[in-house]
Image 1 (cartoon, rainbow, N blue to C red):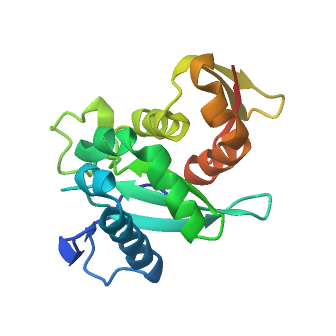
Image 2 (image 1 turned 180 degrees about the horizontal axis):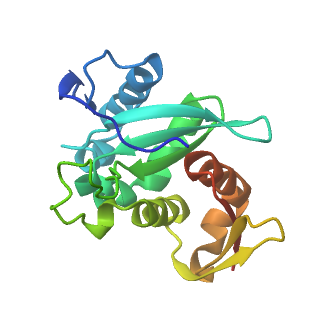
Length: 198
């Protein structure tokens, strides 16, 4: 599975990209940061909205249907501010990226379970850093601006699990057309199957 976090030290690459990595940013990350800079430069309202906002990474993933998607990772503390302009940002990025689906996720880190060999065994692991919590948060990020109102897990005959997620119908028009893509992205990130309904 691909998880939305990076490691190592802070390296500054541009006003729109603060990447937590010792390596240079990828061409995709540089391009996304440049597109956000251009968006802010060309629109007064977006210049205000994007002020002091930045991304921490971007990754293109291949989906099972042969398509691809670009995941833009943002700092958790800035997620709500990105949500306010998410429709406009995603629309502009998808135009620049030749129609490739774009999703915005907060950067989160999963901490391993304490063990006898783990020096931090005595330190209580925050629930927000558990695998379960991070996967749930990814799901919530993906379906924004809709909200999850119910979730059920079905166990198949072979023992594998599939989630059925019920979304708030008030945002159906905004998200319904991309639910297949969101399911594929979630599968790629977490290895888990999910279907959506309203």
